[in-house]
Image (cartoon, rainbow, N blue to C red; front, side, top):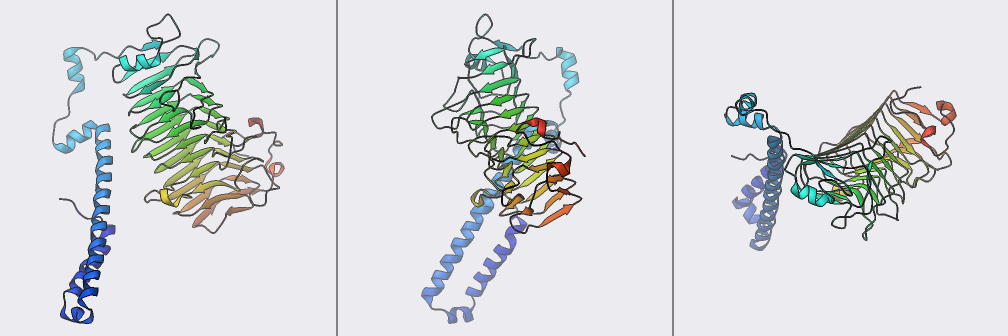
Length: 424
């Protein structure tokens, strides 16, 4: 039997009390029949709306629970009272389970010369490799697969440029449990100016992207995966927003979580954010988000709020950055995530490289929960926020300029930035 969420009980109690009051003779005597009917109609509409909101919340919770159960089948079996399968015994009886053999895609002389055909032929859970060199391939990944770009002895990658599927980009992801790794992707342009190196459609689930070099495209990564988890590791995104793209270095829509680790997002163009995320949880660790000589807006725009954690990273706003603040929180009121809202920024270098700018704020926020900034080295900031926040500032080192921070002069290159996690 479903139970009402605790946050809905006060509203329900108030409605029931109101109905009780309306049924008493004294209340009936105080109002005309016409006004009483209108009040009953209004309260009934409020109750119906509350029930609809409650049902939607339950559906969202059940959907997320189902996804978690699918990820952990053994726990699901234990909950249902079933005995988990003995995988080792099964393997010993029938022999080791065979691994799908990788299919190879290249220009000529291998199993496939078209990425779409390789994806169509692949079994779920399979591996597709793409040979080094420049390719005009594109593919829609609609099943769990690993796509791996190969490198030659000189380090030359499998390079996707020119191919576009569904008017979106070279790689369009439409399933859960997809891994994309090893590719160079560049110069993606489409008529909508939303061409992305990697496009994640709403029906996608858990996605892992690693060791990608995405550059000179209208967008780096674009999209969201519903309730899924998106992880980006060991990758470089550079000069995206090209072709006057409606773009950001990385733009994640709704997702359960987005994690960026050991990666760089550099020189974003056309006033796009280095990272824009609407995920319920956004984590940035050991990474560099730097405007350099680009024309970015913010380093991080967590436009839906939620949980934001930034650790051991370098956040830099340059002379061409469009906004006064480095980090925006919940600045799109119509797209604000449900609670909790928490922001933690710790052990980072945060550098403002336009000391002539009137205002240089760490945060700008419209709706937020606790905000903690601690153990950061902050260069050139004029104030923590545009307006007072519920902020806890601990052990931050505030430095007027690069010289005081012991940094080299700003030259619009990575060479003028400290390494992630470096301390003075």
